Length: 192
Image (tube, rainbow, N blue to C red; front, side, top):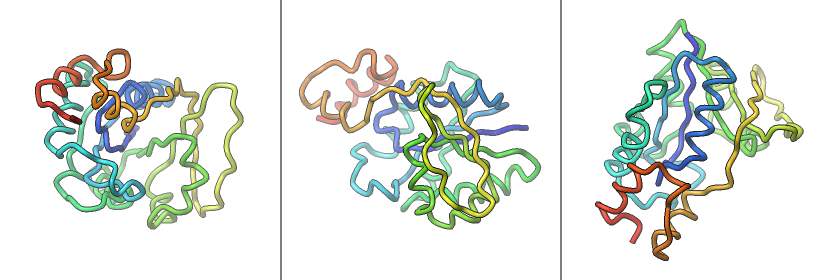
């Protein structure tokens, strides 16, 4: 079985996240795709503004209807800084005979050598990196055993930080965020 993992803060989840997940799922012919919200992203220590419960609820609201996608709360339950290596070890133990794929944006490729225990991570998973169609790939870092698969993504220039600002300024999230997640944000008065 081919299983893909897409991590992130999802604060809030937006169409950029979901298009990346769909592009990787379809182009790499994955059997399963698991969204993995981070408890605390190591490279963005002060980025999250919503509670773990709120981020998980928004993500569930956004994809509950889509049977292609699953959500794992493993990083949220673990707490603390969420390192990909810890999560990859967890899933490798759960799925010892499956092909595991870690999905990243092409902008992460030049920074990959900075990830915690990257050599071990490269042994545990193959990386799928999303790039804009027709754009050349970034320089590939020299990491022993690194396996990469390019995926042409419908990348959208949307950031969760920008979306939180839009809420503070009373601007619409329509066309950026799935409707059910918008309803959740309004009902729980998030980002105000």
